[in-house]
Amino acid sequence: MTSGRGGTESSGSGDIARTLDLLWNTGRRPSRGPKPGLTLERVVEAAIEVADRDGLGAVSMRRIAAELGTGTMSLYRYVPGKGELLDLMLDRVQRPSDDPADLGDGGWRAALEALGHATLALYRRHPWLLEVNQSRPILGPSALDGMEKVLARIKPMGLSDPELVSVIILIDGYVVGAARTQLYEQEAERSSGLTDAQFWEAQRPALEKAMASGRYPVLAGLSEDTFGPDFDHFAFGLQRILDGLEVLVARRAGT
Figure 1 (tube, rainbow, N blue to C red):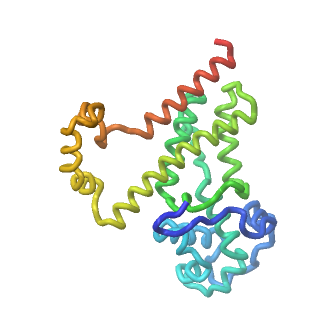
Figure 2: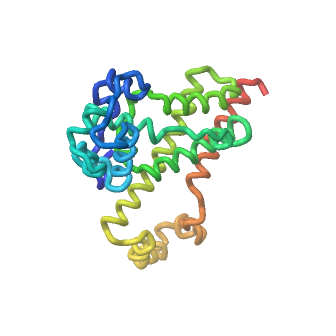
Figure 3: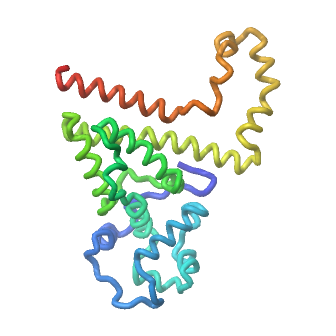
């Protein structure tokens, strides 16, 4: 995906073995840092802060060093390069909450609904995630912790293991599409200088004339609130996905 903030980068583009060492805390760490208080966790947090503020393209070892007030070479004591740093960033932002209630207080449907909304919120907090090709992720503790918690909640669906994983992929795919649309809208407003309301108001005279022509009777007959901001398209779509899964679960259960 390409946005106004940069192009696509890929997870797993660094030294995989070194990244796994860092993620799982199995590698050798510096016995002392060149700057008091500098840690791998702080380096990763600084990189995330830059990406949140200025986009993934702004993340570089030089920029992170400047943010931390240290020399660029000092960072290489903690992380080999940007490829490995990106995977650490991805795992860090996916760290699940320790509160079981975050996945709802009901069964599998409540868990998936909560997952959908939580994932959308994650992309809103970190829009640079949409700039990363995660088709081959490096699996760290946060990613596996999150998957473990979701699978434990949806296991009662009675589906096969591949199907359960597919359910998670289905929800994530839907959320990514919605998040990308929202990001495009924000980018369009930022680049054009027009709010969404101003953009559509500029088209109103032409559209009113088109509706009065008789050429579009179905469109002309739609209610005034059809394209209003009050309808939650994301929630509506998510519920229809869950409805479909409900049918499948009932069919497998023979009810």
